[in-house]
Image 1: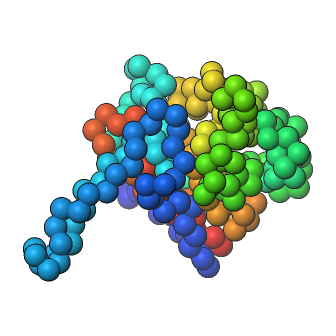
Image 2: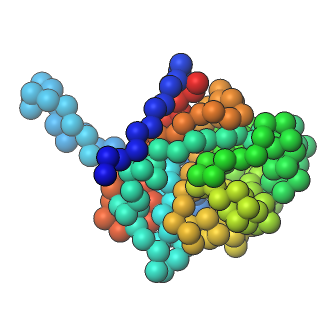
Length: 238
């Protein structure tokens, strides 16, 4: 049988991944990002560095085994699963007032009233405006006096609705977690990854995407049994 063919048309390609350096915001307890020069042009004839960072550092994708002991590692994601439609829900007006805001089912239905029902296999990207805080770690994590982080995310109810009723391929966000910062239950991560779908965190340039019609290409490091991977995410914009 001849496999089905898919055609993707686009006018622009946009990076949705931050540049990686040693000064980017790091989740508490994550290993530091380090670059070590191994070879130099004058002495060795070529330039080479070694780098070290956590599997959930920078713009990254989480794997099921990061939240479920029986889950697969990032190396088990098929290539087909990493080329997916993307839709963007913009909640910047709300998060500017309430940094703890969590996307609701009502928000999803309001988006659909304007743009149509979310197609199956889409990745739902949440534009919270947090990408503008990336180079200010204090603002990005927004900790209070008790050390609790305050940034927006997906609610458990909205996540379950999107998985069950819209059969989405996954979720993504411009904060350091698809779960709101003050929620340490990681409910959204757990729900999405229980079904081996996609979780993208620390995205950028979501403000450059249309609400619908984008194709995402998610580049991963195929780390054996990896709990996730830094990700090069490209958006093909029609």
